[in-house]
Image (tube, rainbow, N blue to C red; front, side, top):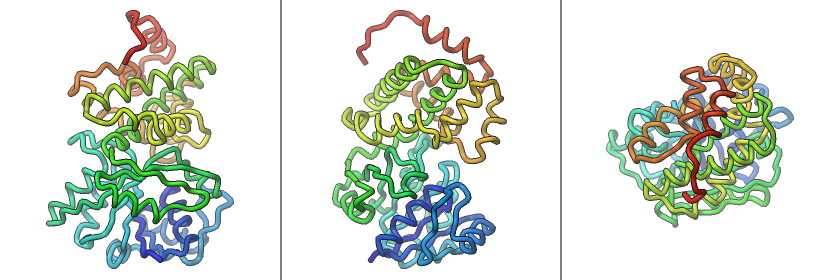
Length: 334
């Protein structure tokens, strides 16, 4: 039995907490929102995970120290924009624990991945742990919470640490693979959300399956192109964290990014679409970093740049589609 702290009580944090508790682990969940902790503890339900009951063995706390101290594993399950603040708050209580990040994003100001953000904050507190794993893949919380078969990747430069996390999370319904290309895995997790936004937009406009298939394929090409320029492994992009996660995020009804894009495609302003979704839309958050990375590495990413024009500069989706379709003729080679 492991002692595990989960920082964040959103759908993904709760789905993973349930999975771990059902394995017999001692799980403590913390949230920065006291009202959220009170509701979850009292009802044993999450409003965005209908039909799921939270195991009574899970302990809820408003004290981040209690969620971190004496734990073997700490899971960072807050939205990407809150990872740095959460790491800063947790730093005094982190010594030698294995840290698992499940947030997907790139910090715009530093271009750090989420595990790099955590490492950066911990180093300010004198902690230089190498035991940080990115857990990423095609994993909607709604399905994990119902024990539907799911696969995911535990990525760490130290394969033994990745294997430790693999063992900790693996069940007959939750299959965990390992990967040492943590940079590639994290890049995929952040960038695919932007392509999923585009997928939703094209559906909202009224385009069909041909268009979506083209978008997903060429979107993966753009992500891979950037990853190779950054020194990542090509294999990562054609694995679960790459094309696998992109497919589910760009097509699923559970995808916040896909849903937000759909609302934008029907004519709603991005800010109104985000409000209607009612949860964090990571694709919107990822856009500034994606643009900076493309420029830094001199990589052509027309879909990403076009989504940015739609979201930030109110270009009409139909005009954007014409712009993409009438670009100079190209070879399909990366």
